[in-house]
Figure: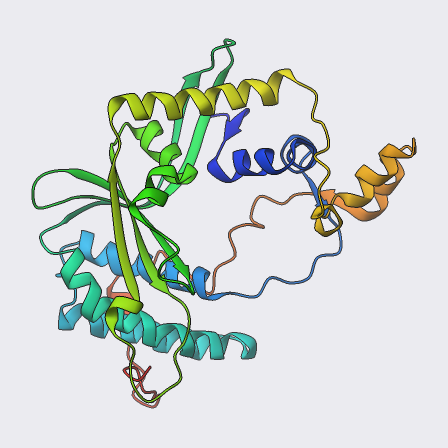
Length: 311
């Protein structure tokens, strides 16, 4: 499938922020030549472990079971042995919080579920009001059928404030709306994992560590979301990308180009000197290989010792 005119939630979000930034990043496909190396953060690694965990649940493992916890412990041990110096601390910080999620939260929210897809990538062809044929694209963290037979979409989010997300914020979440419209699934939810690491001796209550918020879109609601998405794509395709000046502009990697353009300077030389074509793998940095089987994660190293249960 040719992914010309393909639109993801993050791409549309960039357009909302600034049409010119969207044009540089997604139409011209350029980025700064000199880039600071991306360090793996809490969210990246937490999502990677979630991927492994729910793939095992999809294969038949019981959420929170001893087998599954031991498998995840082995995975983390192997990651620590393979990690470079700057990521060893990250693994050691993320795992205790994920351990509590796997042993406490998951057995509650995942009881009786049937995992259908983990990090499901979709490409759905649609036609805009102006007649453009485009592709809606995205990667959904989890699609499952609950014990009542309802199919749900879940997005795993990390952050430092458990109150960030509510049922109302789930209703308004553009990413979940994009997913729901694309796959015509009404039930969406956010599973929140608090990334603030409490260093005190007393473990904080689970209510401050996790949250699950759900929303069920009505057919009318989904139709409105879809109409908004398609009309936005028409604006992208049919209008000239104008600069959206704001105080955040100096932090944009393309500020130099916009500034030069406003002074009547030809920016092609600046592009050739300071920008390059975006590589397709730049946004897919991972700590280790995700697509290993459960048995490959079960290779314990008896010489390696670490405390996995203390926050």
